[in-house]
Length: 117
Image 1 (tube, rainbow, N blue to C red):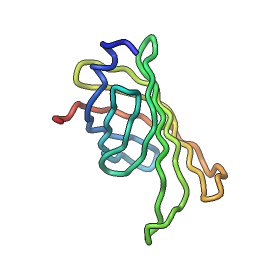
Image 2 (image 1 turned 60 degrees about the horizontal axis):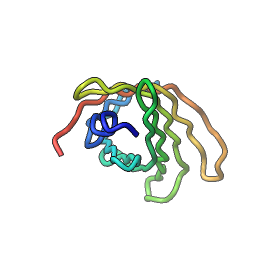
Image 3 (image 1 turned 30 degrees about the vertical axis):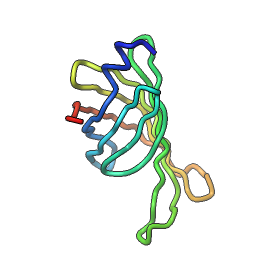
Image 4 (image 1 turned 90 degrees about the vertical axis):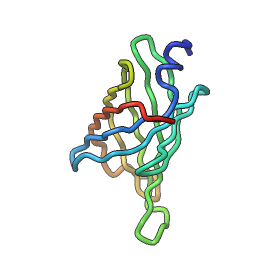
């Protein structure tokens, strides 16, 4: 990964996730080793990669039922660009049930601003 992309993306971000059912805020943290985590407003882990014109990332987010049990998972796939202390990305999220069967895929747009560490 190029140092400029790593340093531009590394750290904590406050992200607004726009999906068909509405908009939510989450916290993301991109690490220099290529890992990425949802750290607020949910939980999940994945990886990011520098691309020629930006970056891509994917995150697996477990879903929990009302009692805290496993209810399936979401795979988030995004491609984005960084502009100073902001980034935007677009992609899709695929929702799977507890048996791994795909339930639905929806378009997602994320806008984020850098947070203080």
